[in-house]
Length: 106
Image (cartoon, rainbow, N blue to C red; front, top):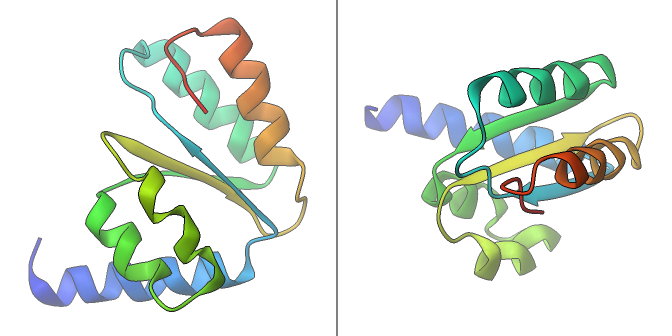
């Protein structure tokens, strides 16, 4: 990823996270492709965004914001689930999936 693309990704993420009502951080290691596809579809249907991002991009996007407190949680493969409309939707879906998929960790 070139510097310009990284800057754009950071700016876009920062803008979306500023509007987010809630945020769920997950570790998706070992999740089967079909389970991941189902998970993404559930998030999409609920109006949530689910993004797998590099921890450094997340760190730059949250720097100087109230979400900066999550930085110690950014270890290993990280995915963010957030919603601008329904604050409970990301947590509800992630909890449901975590019960069915033991490798999906919140």
